[in-house]
Amino acid sequence: MNNYTQMLRNHNLKATPQRLAIVDMLYMHGHMSIDALYEVMIKKFSSISLATIYKNINLMLENTFIQEVKLPNYKSVYELTKESHSHTICEKCGKINDIILDLNAIVNTVSTLKNFEISKADLVLSGVCKNCV
Amino acid sequence: MNNYTQMLRNHNLKATPQRLAIVDMLYMHGHMSIDALYEVMIKKFSSISLATIYKNINLMLENTFIQEVKLPNYKSVYELTKESHSHTICEKCGKINDIILDLNAIVNTVSTLKNFEISKADLVLSGVCKNCV
DNA sequence: GTTTAAAGGATAAAAATTATCTATAATCTT
DNA sequence: AAGATTATAGATAATTTTTATCCTTTAAAC
Ligand SMILES: [Mn+2]
Ligand SMILES: [Mn+2]
Ligand SMILES: [Zn+2]
Ligand SMILES: [Zn+2]
Image 1 (tube, rainbow over the protein chains, first blue to last red):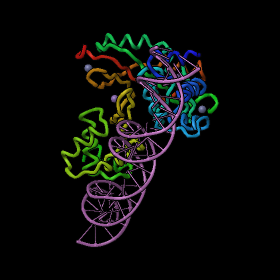
Image 2 (spheres, rainbow over the protein chains, first blue to last red):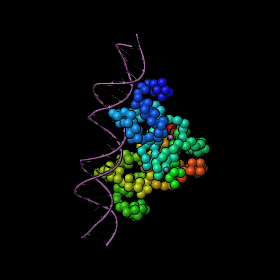
Image 3 (cartoon, rainbow over the protein chains, first blue to last red):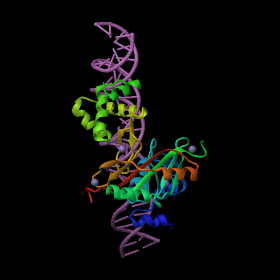
Image 4 (tube, chains in turn blue, yellow, cyan, purple):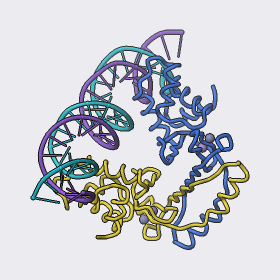
């Protein structure tokens, strides 16, 4: 019994094959839109319903198993929750990459300057990746 | 003839009252969702169609008169294009604020480190504003 | 004022997301 | 291991969001 099975059960969620496959796909592909997820899932479960994808994505979001990443000009993608990080997205090829950046300086500046208690910083850097120049 | 009239005409867009009102509302309110915009517009134009809002928002986005701001847990809001800036959003009251931050250090780091040519940096800081602590 | 091209409003259509319902499968209990 | 219990998958409908179409009106050019 793998750790995602256990993790799901700890939240009173049944470890169904569909659910574990979603987690698996997100683990393998990194960032996936609803459509992309449905496309790969239908190959494994020929009769899976799109509603099942939505229901599970929303459930996993509520339980913070996964995170939504909102991107300029693109549809949202979803990823397994991991260490807080930023994203780059290539405007040419659409490739999304994780990047761990130290935003403490900025966060602290804003906290003191604006008296704003920051709990989360979402940063997306758009541009052109090295493969597309 | 105000400057937005001229600006629209320069892009071969007719300066209709509806269009100018949208610009006006965005100027006054700062950041508005489609729904919020429709709500205030219907007060001025009792028979305005929601389609008109969508059509104009999309048109103005294409012409970069306005920008879309994607926020975690909220619907997108739109604002007049101005100097590049970041946003704070209060998780308690939903208030969105502009904040001008120097992201050059980070942008440069990523550019050289990852060979990624950055054209835009979208940063949203979520937390609790001073009025909501 | 007349012309013409674009835009507004009404409405339908399409796309995206959520809700409902029932059979089934996962987990719990014994 | 068998039976009881409960959540969930899948089918489908409903709702919500966004876009397209069509015709009339209006802004801008002449
Ligand atoms: Mn990521
Ligand atoms: Mn802003
Ligand atoms: Zn690329
Ligand atoms: Zn607040």
